[in-house]
Image (cartoon, rainbow, N blue to C red):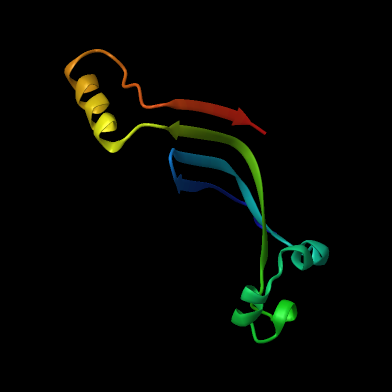
Length: 102
């Protein structure tokens, strides 16, 4: 089965804004137990043949690297930090960033 190299992006908004990105490989999985674990009534509504429908595909994502950014500041503070950074040599203070290797 061919492997695709790619990434995924996730954004969650609450009191903090968190952005996460992961890069790795995606391939088709034939693991019926894994499909059983993730199957739901929502998925069942989309596929007439249920889990055995010929259009059902289970994909496995294997992460290699990832990054996370958490910004606990308001939109106005964010804009201020961007303007300040563009007018000076200072880096903007917009929260915490980190990288991880899996």
